[in-house]
Image (spheres, rainbow, N blue to C red):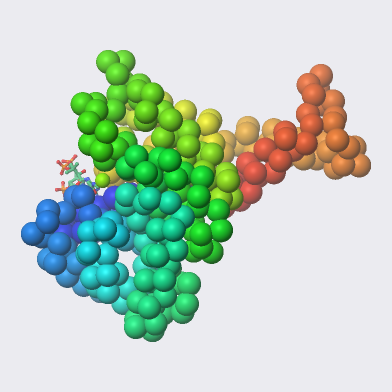
Length: 290
Ligand code: COA
Ligand code: MG
């Protein structure tokens, strides 16, 4: 999973477009891109679209439901589970306990829809509230459904009363950099994937490419998109390059040749166990990216 493309659940035209993109995952949104009085309509449009689409090759389906406190999550799940989505994205998550709660709700909805137990994965958005940010370290062991952690800046800015998430040069300000860093650490603590947030300014191709590169450098393995044009840029940035794969392979091979030593000399540079782990992770990621 490298690219996850959001699509408003109430737009059949955009649903068509999203599923013809090269995104690894399409996130059908029932939350913030759908107005409150349009929720029922969005469930119906998205549910019918996904059922009609059936199981065909192409992007996997995730559904972003409304937050647990909204009272709408149950209806969202009830409408979407018959279409057998691969996963559910949980907005405004307040910690591992929310993932446990959603997991219990899914168990019921899976039974009603005739789906196997635990067929549906969960990716929470963990930094959209103050409580969420402080709970970033609580996702380990919350559920075997956990397929990654992601973060959001826009809702957090509303929660704390910030007028912008970025400074005049376009860089995230401190609170949002903290949220981003806690997502990387929280994902590591929970042994799951860290997924970078969206880049709303979708006409700014250069800024977007730079943000993708920074995210991959820092440990994110995927990024969310809001526009189809962003998908190929994400896929390129999060697919390890041929050089990176070759370098990782030579590190792994050198350790093997050295009889799995603790530390080796490779062309005048020291490599020890963390470098080996990093090389193995990159090869695993390259394998998944095909
Ligand atoms: N998924 C599928 N198709 C999309 C899309 C998306 N996320 N974003 C744009 N498109 C389509 C448009 O419908 C348009 O298709 P058309 O030419 O057949 O009408 C085409 O791509 C070009 O779009 P463009 O004109 O560049 O942008 P727009 O003004 O139509 O849409 C947004 C801009 C921001 C409204 C749109 O990108 C969008 O809805 N994004 C997702 C928002 C979302 O889900 N937010 C929640 C998560 S933060
Ligand atoms: Mg939101």
